[in-house]
Image 1 (spheres, rainbow over the protein chains, first blue to last red):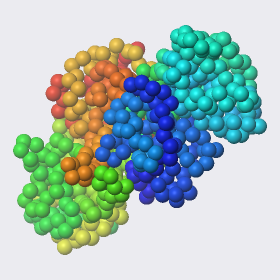
Image 2: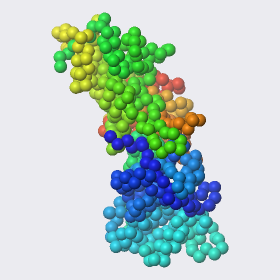
Image 3: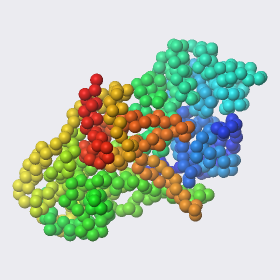
Image 4: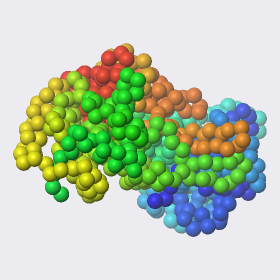
Length: 279
Length: 341
């Protein structure tokens, strides 16, 4: 019986800050300390892992790299509580521990041939990044890729160099936003749901995926409905406090679903049935 | 295997025989009865109603180590449950054994929980039928159980007055019966029939009941119903209803480190009735008040669990009713669910 509570040690190859401030976001590019772990490891975009340090604790994060990026995993982590603060202390050469992959994934196989629109806000771009990367690495399998992303200020944007590359190479149509006017900002000023209406993507043969703060998700879902997207064309991820990550410890449920095991990826049609989903 | 009898004057020597295993039996501890490991048969107290703390703590301890570590060292030392050895729980009530059979589904669902499942494999359950209901708040018969129920048990003992009737129910049970053969005699003719009569009589003595039909489907439709505010108004959030519930299985995971740098990752019982249970690091809490938490407790037992595992996560032992400090009564809540429109 494999013990799902025992984490793997990972070594940090590179670490860098995506955003500044009290709630800064740091990205860790890691590889398994024991190379053999790669033989058993396989994940898909949307899946998560328990990340932590023995003696401090562990918390659930999405794996922010796509499996098409070989030989490493990425985690982009916002400094928030005890565990994330301890992780933020770590630099290249240091270790932490990972259990996973956990949870379900975005059904990218089912999306083949479709146009995909990602709508992200703040750190919510982390689970969308592997979707975008997967599509870029399997470009012929998908139709148009539209990336809509916003954060409070331009400094709060994650993955900035990648967005520049994404727009210029023609893999995707990028639409960026900041909440308030700032000098030299050439793109949209306003909230992500408003930018979505501005871009106004067609629902025809399309899938929309949205991740971000709950209030943004709420209005994005409403606006997608206005644009004619059916609930089964819309996907999002949920998060809740988690401990085991494997559907045992109880706390992350929304209705009868465990976010850790049945999620984190849900279609809007699934969540419409669950009154607790957006509590 | 033939039914046997265990004469009451041979119970002590039978228990003595079983101390070669890790023997767990009901024992008095201050004012209450709990299941604990016994070395001396005199400690066992079989004339009990039911234990305050259910025997789930034997297979799912209140706190247990998952692995040990030394800070700064990459090596993690997994806790080996096998070291605990073969275990016999002697004299547990049928409802508590059935609760384990229900919780088995959760711990073996998709990911296998090695700690719980190894312990279950190592454990033989010797049940003691309820000739008299242990409490006025017993309602096992409403949930598919019965005072003589055998689900989850390996052996069933029935108190026949001067002896116990011994019925092995599983291979594990037969093996244990074999171990005890020197202390057992053939059961008197007519004992089995008499036990059946006692079982029927015992069912008739269960005083409380609820018709659970339709409750799992109805609960999600009552999400915003005012009843949740009413039934949770008196709740203190002490969590006793969940800690002492034989099917409650929620746990927390915490790391503990000593000054030497040695530490462990441990899991411990947690309760959905605590606000910290669902509190996000951001400060947001999806279940901010006892209204939402009570709604979740009842919905988890009577709707979510049966939806996934095809069985209600309640065995009708009555502990949450008997031990609630403010007399919240799960049957009264369920009555309101049935009556709500």
